Length: 222
Image (cartoon, rainbow, N blue to C red; front, top):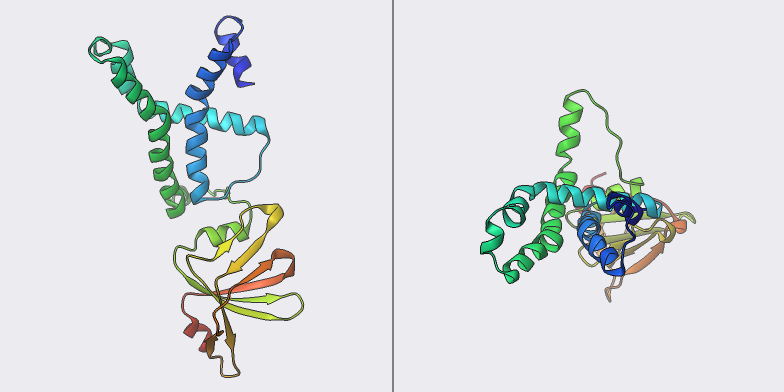
């Protein structure tokens, strides 16, 4: 789709293999890198290939819009004659590979802080979250270690500590939860780590619900 549009923009001239690679690197790779960076901060809904390509192209345009003034100076003014081919290649590498990562991190930070959403809500505008599920939303917001109590469908309770070595899948077809340390809760609601220490892997179809605490003592006081 994108290559067809580019071909039409050139007056219907057929693209060579080199042209296809050049346009892909120029107009799709920056957007792909930025989107990949953003996905680290917030899960995305599954989309068709054409929608993904259009998003990559849009993000690439955002990337170039940030640097349009510098691109103009380098390639369309007398600075082009001053810069050698090496420095021109360096700038291209920055525009295509480094800049999308930096912008993606910045946008991801804004997304996690929900600043744009808060501003729109203050203006009286309701927004819809792009996060696919509550599972993705909650686990993407866990910036620190938490204590979990997982109630399974068979009535079994699994208590544990979720830290940097724990993991919650963000793939909708393979939901699972790994808890790095298991605990037992006695009749006095006292948490005791299992000895020897062990983790546990839970499948989503086995989970009924999950309770979260920043401190295991909070649960003991309930």
